[in-house]
Image (tube, rainbow over all chains, first blue to last red; front, side, top):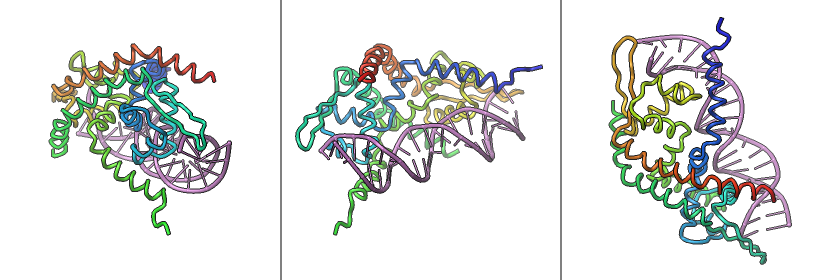
Length: 131
Length: 131
DNA sequence: CAGTATCCTACGAGATACTG
DNA sequence: CAGTATCTCGTAGGATACTG
């Protein structure tokens, strides 16, 4: 008898694959930069250091929770630095680290591709939708 | 009296920003390639055309639903082509289009950055977590 | 100013079953 | 073989209120 159903086999494969994916550097990067707000923060900081309040204004529509969470993750990964000035009220500046700056070209490349091919995609979508 | 609370103002900004983001080509691309399975499918097809069943085997752990959904989206965007051979049983081949191939370098660039900097990120995370 | 701490919900995504 | 059609569940992410 079949002690392994197709579902069971796929389940095992999924678990193994999840582990593999979790270690895949490319996936980790994609998980990170695909985050809704990450690229926007990166972009905002590309021009130079920014204060927390500046970021929340420049990146209109972001909630406090998501901005803080995004910044924490980026800081944790060593992509941005956080500098606290203990005045009253406190002042916090965020800036790209060297590592963060080295990532910019990659993001720019993606942005460039997107801008130069978005029309083709729109055409493809329209064609696909009218059938 | 304040007819506009901070929350209301942010809400308006969020709506406007959502609309802006929805039109941002870079965001659309990121939304697309950050999809869990998209990069894997792209990668699998980089070597040449594949049948549906081949893809589901090569990309172990993917469910039928997600594979189909991923392929449909890629097809809709004109990144992959779908060729049906009406034999019995039917045979379906997927392949990258020219547009799809032009995207590969971008994905490769991201992959290359990830692989050469993943160690720095791990170091940063470890440092961050032990404080 | 620059955040925590909670609560809540819409949606992504897997499991399962069925089909031309 | 190559898909659809449903159902369910976890969680990302937003709203809201409070704080050093």
